[in-house]
Amino acid sequence: ANRTRYSNAIAKWCESKKRRQVGNDECRPLAHDALEAVGAMPSQSLIHGSLLYTSIQPASPEPRGGILEAGVARGDIIQLLKAHFKSKDGSQKWAGDPDHTAVVTGVEPNGVLRVVEQNTGGAKVVKKGSYDMLELVKGEVRIFRAVSESWVGKLDANW
Image 1 (cartoon, rainbow, N blue to C red):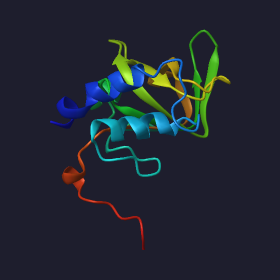
Image 2 (image 1 turned 120 degrees about the horizontal axis):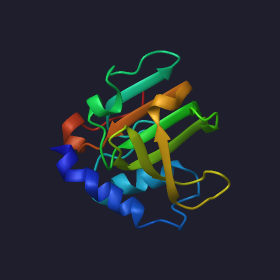
Image 3 (image 1 turned 45 degrees about the vertical axis):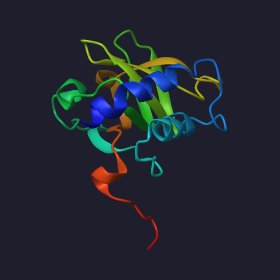
C-alpha cells in the first residue's frame, strides 16, 4: 500500500528537480524534501521509512536474493555508508564518506539501480546516477520505502 501511495510520487518529485539544487546542496535534502512533499513520514536522520534491503560488505545482503528479491522499486531511498563499488572492467566508485542518500528512479532486470542524487562528483545539483549492488565490495547500503506516519506511529528521538 505504501508503494502505491508514495513511491512514484517521490520519484517524480525528485526527477522534476534535475539540474537544480534542493535544500542546502547536501545529498539528504532531496529525499527528505520529497518525503515531505508527498505527505510520507519524514526522514529520521539516516532512516527514510521501512527497511527493505541491507548489504554490509564483505558479507551477504539481506534478503540473500538481493534487491530483486527485496522488491526494491522506483521511489525507494538508498542510504550508502562508505560504499566502495568495483566493476568487472576494473573501474571503481565510492559513495557515502561518511554517508550518501539517493532516490531510485528505476530497477534494471539485472538489478542495477537507476537513481537521482545530489552532491556527487562535485555537482551540487540533482543528477542521474546508478548503483550495481553486485559490485559492492566494501561498506554499507540500506534501502528504505516511504511509509505514512500512522504506519509506524509518531517517532520521538528524545530520551
